[in-house]
Image (tube, rainbow, N blue to C red; front, side):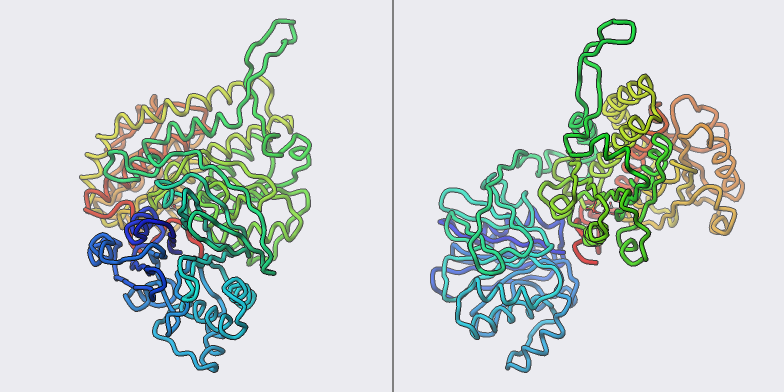
Length: 626
Ligand code: F6R
């Protein structure tokens, strides 16, 4: 997974390409490069290993590279180590075709052998060089122009790609092709842009085209034309992006992650509001009830009739979104009494699936581009099962391919570690669970009203937790050099632990584990040593004492005990060393609140260790490879 950009217009391309890449660095940051053409001249290629800043310094912010048409790339290595040689753009030996690519060419070895037989040689270890030379090969063989060469390549290539290329004989033009990797194209007065994601072009235009799977585009100054695989021109609607560029900037915070943590109250509120409507009703006693809140999933095509027919729900997701699924399993099963299975995207498709036509497959994904989740969605569709996507990025592949889409309204999430994406996904699952419960006759009217009312209190309660963040910062500093951290809980609290543990390890690089509290004694407790930090999550009344006693067991083996619990459970202070309280809520919604201190803890430990919080090593924001 990488970020690509392209520009053609009246301005110098390099500074615009660098600016666009800076908005995409979350997608990969182990090397970067650009290729710029000045009129009919050969493209100038500049590449650098490491962060984008190195490329920027090398080109004096792009000033030393002249020309108004170019493509750029920020890389997250998949084929070939991060190096200047493997960095994009890649080009054919005579500079006839030069381009950038995001995705994976699965059959690149086979294609490479074919090209070698036809006299090509290779300078890098990348699959991209093969793709570019494949385009060059077809361009020269059939002499039918760039669209034909791209189409022929697309038929031969297996895998995923967002490809942007320039051809020597077509100055001032960029050609693009896409399958399964994200790409948008923006146009404005006399200028055209291409990028893996909207933030890269938002400063310049809000009018974008979403290029579809197996489609191609030709960009000239201020104009984009689209083609299908047959080479026939196709029409695409121009879509206006509603959120502003501010949303993709740090806005005074030191890191995107902290900014996004603070955006959670609004993101949650917006997501709730998108599915709650109000109506006037007459009660059984004839009194008028004005403005009664109700959930309206019909707006996303999930009607009561569909819900009535659901036998089982399969939630499929990866990483934090999978943790949402784990929490949602407890909530939906309890509220709606529908069996729920939660599956990792990467596992789902490799099992012999027992899917029933009356099942609902729910794919949860912030980016909407995660390859494993997308593959699972397709698998479910192939089996004729109804699919619902809970997705944040509008127009993403998962959103476009699912039968129904519930958009979380988190706005752009830039930090690699998800926070507001996770929280809004949870809220979407609560809404789904409540509505299923109502329709299946498991939640009476008054209980439904109570739950909806409680949902509406969540944003305020999240803000309250954020007001007290300095205490967590102090605690994080104390444990910044911890070697291991354990998060333990039962039931829903265990699902919260999984997310807390992932937040900690992915950005602070401190080893941490989430454990079902009752399982500790079956092996893991032997890892507890004097001073090991064990954090208990205790939001579920029925499980409180059991988890507490597991926590105390680790304390008697020397662990330092911290816990996250709700206001009122003050007895915890008798047996633990540090307590973080969160406001009371309906227990089904506890994850929304209890996870906030854990996000903050991971963040502050990473900061105290001097790490790059927004761009942790070896990771990228959207994982478009399997
Ligand atoms: C962790 C994190 C990842 C993502 C996972 C799925 O903080 O962000 O674990 O949750 O890669 O990504 P999406 O939701 O885009 O499918």
